[in-house]
Image (tube, rainbow, N blue to C red; front, top):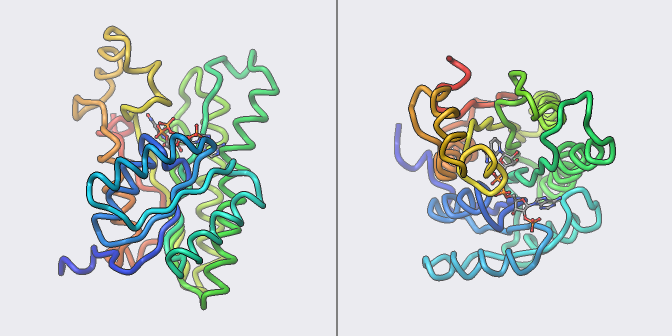
Length: 257
Ligand SMILES: NC(=O)c1ccc[n+]([C@@H]2O[C@H](COP(=O)([O-])OP(=O)(O)OC[C@H]3O[C@@H](n4cnc5c(N)ncnc54)[C@H](OP(=O)(O)O)[C@@H]3O)[C@@H](O)[C@H]2O)c1
């Protein structure tokens, strides 16, 4: 397979939750492959720090926009920034998510349950819809990638609401893929296992907990954000031209056992 099939030269991407962790690493990978990138997150200072870090690495085709991912107007503005700065919209990475509760489903505070659904599910739908509108206005075609989790595929105690939200995201991926295939918009997901980021600190920062987690990971290491970014860049590229409606598990073998 020719190397150029993996190129993203001339493409325009929007990555939600792009100020740190998997989102920032994904942005770096898309930029390396030749794309221009708009990063979104709630806090502008985090986005500005990310932009500076990318500029220091030699990437200047980066714009940022602060918005909650479930805000229709906020996300509409973010896609307008992409159009104004880079004149396109080819790749949407739905990545911003949250997990503010480790309680069992029997005990979970319903306000926290609603917050998880608002960001992780409604937010993904809002971002996908705004992205689809822009792709249609620009003549059709594009790629949407929804970051999921293996907690959507397997019961994980303390991650119940989060797992439910991402199981719904997997369904969103399948349905959008079926609805949009005729318009040449591919929709796929990536389901990471344990990745070393702020979101999952409770599972790897403490040495004993990390040791216990490693026992469940056949590749015997916790993923770095770059491990996930590679899968996203692949799915965004022409090398994945015949893949749609799938969620690719990237978990070091955790689900395989
Ligand atoms: N880390 C893991 O082990 C792991 C495993 C499986 C799946 N994942 C998935 O990977 C994705 C990225 O997670 P991560 O680990 O990189 O998390 P992270 O380091 O906590 O980063 C989360 C990013 O999302 C932004 N964000 C959070 N809530 C937002 C909202 N409502 N609207 C807009 N932006 C928001 C944050 O910036 P602000 O705070 O400024 O908004 C930040 O940029 C998530 O979908 C997560 O479910 C992670």
